[in-house]
Image: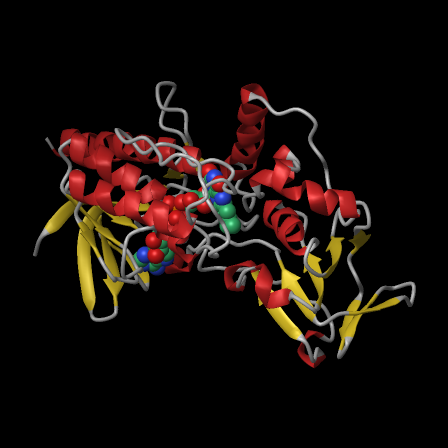
Length: 357
Ligand code: FAD
């Protein structure tokens, strides 16, 4: 039986960065990815999202991110990832969807259908795209119109002539309103009052990441980065702003009815479509047998020391690193976390060797 030094689950930005650094450190590993082709979550993003629309994609180690422009992000970034995998000869196997990871003595067994891999350590880089979150509201199943989540967004043409309710206080909701308001009738609801940011600089970015990291260290479920950074309007959203859709935002409705939504004060709005831009949850159910969660519901992570401060190591099991989780759930964060995870894997393996000697 072959036992690898490590195994990476997921070949998005975080998984590719981890694989690059594992290879550089001379660690034997494989990357298992559920998708049929390269690109991570980017290959599933909607066609109208261009490289000018993305908020900014960080470089991969040793490879500059593609520039801005009008080309589709769901083509440009997958092409870049594919070239990167080939250029660095990264050991990606696909399509392989991992079902569960089990601890067997000192080793971890990673299972996908009837296939399995045995490894000393694991880097989990499965992102969130496969876990869209839709909150429960009474009456949801009685709605006669269409309900879509961000993962289903078909582009603005689909909504023409329809009255669309966009739900959610994150960057995706702001972006959808920006695209839809100039073409059709839209309404916006959010659970909390949106926090608009005036200024954004590198220090504000570091402060935001530090806040999410604090939650994760405490074992709380990770907050979305927007919940700590605030929202901004870009040139693409100015027309919608001029039309007043962001100012006309309402608090959440109380229930869904067959032809629309009703608030607790009795007011009613007829709508044809509910677009749930309500975010995602970490795709970590395959790790459940390892019992990594705290009683607060999150997976607490630790950093391995002063020299590598990004928190990636599961507090409950130092064999397991989570990258692209919580504070590292962005392209820049995933990139840094990949490096931290490879170093943590190397240290863990060395400590084991020393303990055995
Ligand atoms: P992903 O890119 O999601 O990759 C995860 C990989 O794991 C996928 O290939 C998937 O197939 C695989 N996988 C999942 N489950 C399994 C399994 N069980 N077995 C095997 N493989 C599995 N961040 C930015 O920095 N800039 C932006 O402009 C930006 N825009 C965004 C726009 C949207 C709409 C969203 C939702 C997020 C955006 N983000 C952005 C956040 C950013 O996309 C992510 O943080 C980052 O790209 C995620 O990279 P990742 O490697 O963690 O995960």
